[in-house]
Every structure is written in C-alpha cells, then in structure tokens.
Image (tube, rainbow, N blue to C red; front, side, top):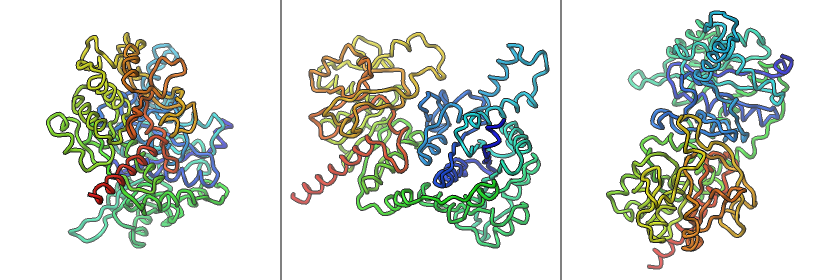
Length: 546
C-alpha cells in the first residue's frame, strides 16, 4: 500500500452519450501533466464481456490496438501512446470478461474457501486490484483510469462502484473524478441545453460519486452564464467546468485544456507542486498540421473503408508523417472490391501513392492484388502492411515470376501457397489471443529503403498475424528482383520486402502504424509520404512540360 499512497489516481467517466472523447480527454490531460515533469500512465476499463477485442468485428469495435507485450486492446490505448509517447502494456487495459474469468478461475480453485461469490465484494475487489496494479511498480506519479461506457449503463456499474470505493479508501488528496458530458446546441431554440449534463451528474451522484471536474463537450465554447448554471446545479466550482469545444484536430485539445487551466486545477486539487510546462514541441507540431505548405493525395485500398476506425492508427500515422514533411495528407478511401470490377487506372489516376493495410478474410483480395499490380507497373509509390505486403508478394509471384496460381493458403490451398500458415499456428483452435502478437526484432539489410528510413540495422515492431511468406518460394522471388530487406534474427521470417527497380515499393509484415507518435512520425510512413510528394511534384512538372 505504500507505493499506492505515493500515487495520485484520476478517474474519467462519461455520460449522456458515448463517443464524447473520454480517451482524448485522458490523453490530453496526461500529456499536460507529463510535460510538467510528472510520470503518467493511462489505463482503460472496458465493460464488455469479451476477454479482449481480438475476435470482435472492426465494424463494431474499430481497430484492435496491439501493445509491445502482445495484448489486443481497445483503440483508446493508441491515443494514450500517441499523445504521451510511452508504451502501454497488458496491464493498461482491462475488460469485464477478464475480471469475471479471473474470479471464476479463483472460485474453481477454491480460493474463496466456500464463500458465495458475489459482484460485491469479489468482482469489485478484482477490479480494484487491477486499478491499482500499476501503482505497485513504483514508476508513476499519476495514474489516469478511463471507465468505458456511459454512466448509468448496467455493464459499467461494477467499475463505478470499485472507483467509488478506491476514492473513499485513498482520500480526496489522492483521487480525482473527471466526468465528460454533453452540452448540446438546439438550433430551433437557439441555445445550449444543460439538462443532459445535469441528469448525467445526477446519475453519478446516485452511485455515490461527486465529480470534481466536468469536461463539457459542445460545438462552440461555453459562455460564462452556461458554465455558472452547470456549476450551480452540479455542485462543481465554475472554474472546474471545462469547455471542450470542437477542434479541427484532436491534437489541439491539449492546448485548449491548457488555456482552460485544466492541468492546474488538477494539480491544485491533488496537492501537486506546480511545475513549469514544456509545450514548444507540441505547439510546433500543431502549427505544422494547421499550416502545411504542400498537400499529397494517397489512396487507401481496404476492406473496411466504410468504417475508418478500423484504420484509426494508420490515419493518425499519416497526420504525423504529413507534419514531418510539412504537408497535408489527403486520404482517398477506396473499397478493395471496386478494383475487382473497375479500372485501377481510373481509380488511382488522381493519387500519388497507394497503401494497402492489414486485414483478414478473402473479400476484396483480388481487388487488392489488382491495385498492387497497377502501382508496380506504373511506378506509383506503394506501401503494404501485413496483408498488404502478402498481396504484393502474391501479385509479384503471379505476374513477374510466372506463377499464375500463386495465392495464400488463407484463401485457397494449393501447391502454390506463396503465403502460408506459420508452423506454430497450425494446431491452434482458439481464435482469441492466439496469433503472433506483440513486438519482435528484425534485422535490416544495408543499402535498403528500410535501412535508409530507420537509420539503424536493428528494429523492433509489433505484429498481429498468422500467415507468413512461404520460404519455399524465397529463391524464385529473389531471382526475379524482390529483395527481403528485413528478416527475423534467425532469418526464418521475412519481415520486409522491397522492389529496388521501383521508386518506392515496400511491404512489411508488421504494423508500423502502432508505433507512430504525434511528434515522432514512424520512419516508414514519413518516407512513404516523402516519396509520394516527390511523385506528385514530378507529375506536375511533366504536366506543365506537356
């Protein structure tokens, strides 16, 4: 308990509706506190019964974010890492499924000595244990805990109760409650309405928690009289009613909160020393986003383009890479299935680069392969990630190596399985948490595009896959011009492929988007955007000349 006593606990809840930005709130506050010199981490508690999001549909959950230690987690952990530039772990994400699984396992083992197992205290005790687990490491001054779902939902009640108990246990000097809520604008009435916020806080009060700070989401900045009204009826100091109005970029939110003195309110409330803040690098990043000198159009050919949260980290990586290239990256999302029936030349005529992301399943595969073929044959900068790399290998095998039946055994099993199931995956039956997950080392070939990007021979990147390039075909691919510029240390796994004859053609088996940071773009995304910009300038020159 001694380590815990040194740590300050901040809890973030949400009310009225979902998707108000609890993750952005937690990340923005975490950034401000970190830039003041505090050691900060953030954890997410999700109320769904799935053990993790690993088997959930991207249409329901968005992307699955993978940590270095192989946890399949909520996409909010991506925000935490991108804002704070720190790596999260399995301990930073807990679900109801994990909690109940642990409690039931203990019950089956007889750990409860014959007691009747109940939500209170057994479930809440397990949640409390997980909420405080990171504090036992002795590495953090502040732990921010985001409670998923909406206050009042039956699923999140055990988490709220555990939060209440911890706040009582550790006291007001060591705990803080932040509630994110909605202040909608009603055009017909011509005014903002505070009732949704009042009702949301009432729900929280009914659960035994008085919020210390209210983050009020609205289209425009709250007027003073609105703040005062919310403060009066929600029993919160008016200075602690923070106006979280819409911004053009989520990366502006920390600066909005700083102007609102949000971090200062938190520090005063938790009796933390007021340290000087360093925001120069972040402000410079924002200026690059807001005032780019160039723009570039890049196509994203994927299976889930109707739901772009499935590619959330990729979209954010393009923002980071654009900033480092002083450019705005405009994404043209194209369904992979379109390439199966429409002319790739028409679909890609106005873009300066093509990215094919990861994914699973056969739908749209032949379209992705056709898109790769167009990029290869027309010297269009190409970037393939995970399945995108596999599609590039299949296309090359078919159309350059003369293996027309080349395919992946994921889609069609034959003797030309250029992409095949990894040996250690063949006897696995459970789908959850059974892929090759997390960070693995990779050695880069000298004088390669990858080496030029990373500027180091040894890298570590995060993976999420079951299939790999079939080593039986490495020689024929190599003989026809494909370079394996990234290999596992034992040289058994191909991690990166390149085509030296092409201006910029690279595929990687890992997911580089999971390591891109706001002020530190991933090297491969940075160089891909740079190559696309150069291609765009060349096109302009040729057009002018003609």
